[in-house]
Length: 252
Image (tube, rainbow, N blue to C red; front, side, top):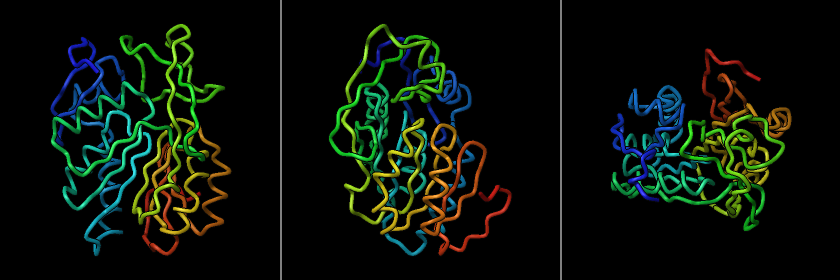
């Protein structure tokens, strides 16, 4: 990635420097104007991590759909050497922006993957490319048709696409503590490829509901003794044995 591109900018945030696209009308704009994005979600996730991992020496966090790294950067700084983060981003340009953010902040507790998290390993999928030089919501890019987000149809370059390999979370047999998942309709595929990991290690999850198969998600987690608390378009999903008293959220 060429940082001299006029739409790429490095800005200071509450947690360090981050590489943004100034044409991103949501995340990029928020960082540029306010120095943060998703700060309330990060605070709640941090509290859950602290509760679950209070007696652990090492926290393992998966950022699935990391985008430019708002959660990755913040949690890396908040928990420092106590946390290890696996960050997954399918868009090559966005992945490279996060790669640069990790580099300029000298973060050693992150492993970055240029993959689409799904239910299979090593399959190749094609992603229609947006025009990163035009104003758009790049974090809302969908990988599979039919698209539910009109931005996908409006701003793709004519015929331009890139290929990315899929990866399943079940390929990581480790005691993951928390999974954040925001992958624009791919969530049900990713969860199918995470079933063994979830059932074995009982992580807490934060999952976007807006474009995924919500009913299937609810059924899967309830059948496996999880409780689901909706927060706007997202949900915190906690194993019943966590016994956390949740207030102010809608229990599904």
